[in-house]
Image (spheres, each protein chain N blue to C red):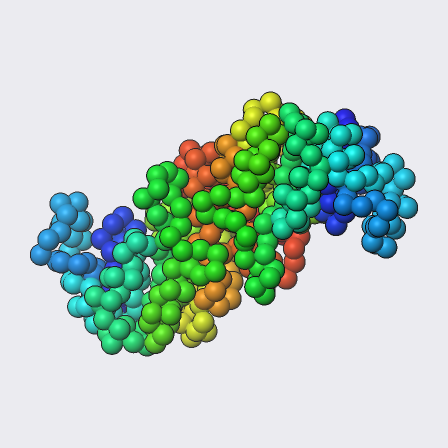
Length: 217
Length: 217
């Protein structure tokens, strides 16, 4: 599959590297591929299968788009990518609308009556947005076996066909089908995004970001 | 211990009945004990150890106060209870600030930069507020063995001494000390309250409210 990962931070790098390892054709979208951070240039140097393009070029290349841009810059990045280039594509939104401007711990820039994923869906109605993977640290997204036993990843969005695409990719990442929990339509993104403040507190209490939840019932 | 449970709904009834079963002296606080719902009158009839008083009388009686009033009516109930009666007492806030006025699923009436428990603490600075138990259905609060294996209950608040009181009561309810997770000060209430939208979605996806999370790390 041709996959465009948007965002050059640790989440974008981790997802791009894993997708390339799986044999997918991967590009990373960034604002200006002529001006890369030293750290991202090192990443590209050690991952020769992954190329950097601008947002528009990356999204034009990809059949599947993964948004790993920070929540604060997501809508701007997608505008630069271009609505026409995004049209009809499946977009996995793994970002969280964290707002660090008011100090620590961060607040959410949107919540309660909407969510980042809903804002994306509203701004780009022809994109098939699926929210997933935002409830855990990057290394765990692509290697659930880092934790023992069962633990869950959530997905939600309006397109059943898009969910199938995402579920298949999650299984390639190592997620058991039985641990992928479908929470419903795109409005369920409020739930998984508003979980972040609790995740941050648990991280603080446990002293590790390598954690997830198992639903017991 | 003398315990005042505020609120006559299923959460208040469940907590009051369990505390009475444990041998505590329990009253339930309500707006007007002369005007009870048929359902609550039946509860009192079958739980002779539990008496109903008005909010002020209940809080005056209790050494420990449990707030199980709905989030929308919590602050009003506590005003009726009286700041002088609440002063210095430990108050366990199990309520959630759910707002059903905009349809289903409910939104939160306060979140992100504050929380219901923080609003209580701000309005009653001499009360030692501990948030706990709001992340699960009532039957599970007082009987964690309804689910197999380990799963967690969170506590947070500003008073270390009050936390010890609450941890002891949680252990009387059946919670293993190792499954009581201290998330820090009262501001962590944002985390556990903002988890509710996700809890509601998981409830919807699983078809049962008898669920909780186990933290895997």
